Length: 101
Image (cartoon, rainbow, N blue to C red; front, side, top):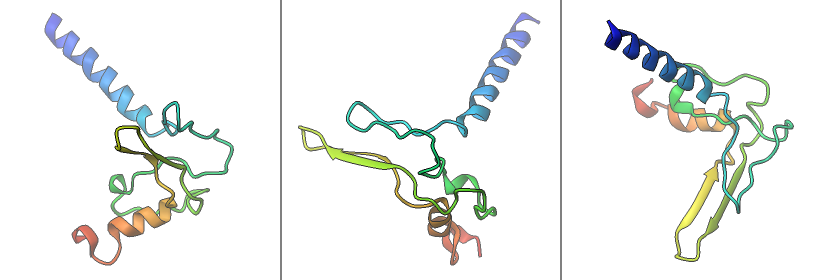
């Protein structure tokens, strides 16, 4: 009984984290500070999570936040994408991409 309750508790915690993941704002680092949520950029968006749902929400036509730089060791670091959610969705799902036609 105790293990069932522990398993249920872990499942609930994982579900809460997954549900809150979509509402997270952009993440960056010390050289790429994410912008404030002031309406300048679209909210973070992953087109792969919305196969049949073309984005029409407010801000879907605004570019996403993007920042990149090259570290001292030569590695390129990139945060975000400058594509709008609509552009991202079309790149992933339009014109037969990913067998959705």
